[in-house]
Every structure is written in structure tokens, then in C-alpha cells.
Length: 342
Ligand code: FA5
Image (cartoon, rainbow, N blue to C red):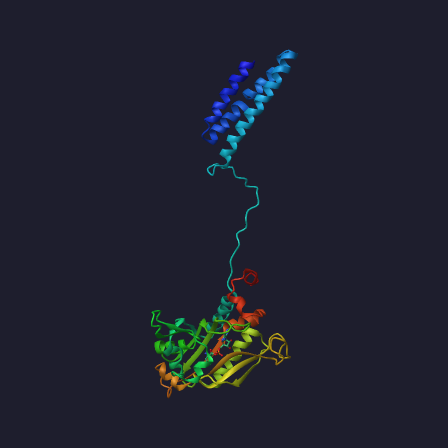
């Protein structure tokens, strides 16, 4: 009995050492470790021994069985960790894939684009690194014009040691694309230009160095101030609801004449006065006016024949108002706690 047990032990250990695949594991399990396997057979045969022998061999048989099971399970586990092994529990709960979503600025930009394409406007774009000429000069702000000071500008150097300035700037507004669009498409023209702008701001809750605007322009025969007012009224109603009213107050922009600031009744308090509108009931949201004849000329359009209107919304500010965001810097922060709310 003792030698039978030892022979079986040697045989099984040898087989365990030779295991190379999951199929080998299964074969050994069936032949030696299953209910009708050779180990069980030996254990059963103990009952045929005398009481004394049973005591002696029983202990030895149990010890051998335990050692063999441990040796086998070690190797078996190695095989179940193998990535080729199909040891897959399909009843475990899955890991849900998180879906991304649009940035709030993109959401509002698309809303605005839908609105204006519905009114027959095209959507165009222009470069973010812009020439000084398009950003300022062509917009009736020649070099040294004091109105340039209204927009703190990132001028771009040529990157060499002499630090000589190229005549390039990170565009401070989307208005330079007015000129590019007029030069490219001529009149009549109806377009909006959403895009990113840059100013050398001391940033605060309402000012960022990088923000979004959208420009609108309409050039044709007999375009007048009523067209501008009507268009801005429609935009206000669409963006802030049917009760929204518009008021226009004079403001100087060198590229429009007359120029004005468009203000809407505060959609939070319906014009009664609240924290957001600083108790005035009005929100200043858009710069606008009739395109200055010099600007039409720079765009290659005859101001004797055509006139035009233009307006510029702060898209980032629109998003702030629409979603009740109290700090504009959150939009560029990449903070998921903020972004996941939209
Ligand atoms: C302009 O940029 C003019 N180009 C707008 C214009 C277009 C007027 C066509 C007339 C005709 P202004 O500097 O006011 O104007 O900027 C327009 C809007 O951009 C502001 O009302 C504000 O909403 C937004 N804006 C300006 N600077 C910042 C900034 N640093 N951070 C966030 N938003 C800003």
C-alpha cells in the first residue's frame, strides 16, 4: 500500500510538472482528482484494510492527497491567469463606458448657428493669428489710433533674437473676418463668424485671455438701422425667450457708424433688477452698428452703392448668462466637476 501510494504520488507530480495547457490540466483533474479518479480510488480502498493498517495508511494517504492537491492547484491557477485562458465570468457586472459630451460654448455656438442659418446667413471662419492690418487698420483703426487701446493685444514677434515684431497679432475680436469675407464674397453678403479671440487681460470673473465671440454682418443695398434692430430683437427672443426686449445705446466702435451697445432685458428677473444685471434690469450683450464706409472700402465694396450692418456678441458671456456661470475662467479650466454639468 505504501509503495502504491508513493508510485502514484511520483506519477502525479511528474504529470503536474509537464502541464503545458489547459487541456493538460483538465486531463489530470479527471484522471487523478475527480470523484472517480485514482486518488479517490486509493482512499476508498482504505476501508478494506484492517483497523491498524487503516490508521497507519489513512494518515499517510490523507497527507499525500493534500500535498498533491496543493501542488496541482498552484499550477492550475497559473493556467487560469494566462490571458489565453477563457476563464471569463460573464455574470460579473460590466464597466460602463462614460460618454463624452459637447463643451457648453460649443452647445451655445451651435444654437446660434442654427438660428442664423435659418435666417439665411452663412457661417464662415478666419485665422486666429491675424495680421495687424486686418485686425485693426482695415477696421478703421490705423497705427497709433487711440481706439486700439480698447483691446489689449498679444502682438507676435518673429521669434529671433532681434525681437523684431512681425505685423501679426492673436486676433482680439472676430471683426477682421468682416474684411476677409467682403473681399472674398463681395456684396450682397449675410454671414456669421463664430470664433476664438485673445486679449492680454488681467483676468477676472468676466475677463479671460482666451474667449469666444461671434460676429454677424449683412451687406447689401439699403441695409439700415431698422434691419439691425429687428435682427437683434429676433436673436434676443430666440436666445432668452419671447418676453425679451432690446434697447440700443450709443457706443463708439471705429468700424461702425453709428455704433451702439445692444442690451436685453435680464432674462433672470425679466427686467425687474437682480444681482446678474446689477439691479438695472438690462444686460449689455452685443456691440453693433452700421458698417463704416472706410471698412466697406477696405473690403472692396462701394459704400455709395451698398451699406451694411455688423454686430459682435461675446459667445462666452452668452454661455455665462444662459447657464448662470459666475466665473468665465471655468470654461477653459478643464475642470470635469464643472464640465459634467452640461
Ligand atoms: C468688439 O470686440 C467688437 N469687435 C464688437 C463689434 C462687432 C462691435 C461689430 C460693432 C460691430 P468688445 O470689445 O466690446 O467689442 O467685445 C465684444 C464682446 O466680447 C463683449 O461684449 C464681451 O461679451 C466679449 N469680451 C470682450 N473681452 C472679453 C474677455 N476678455 N473675456 C470674455 N469676453 C470678452
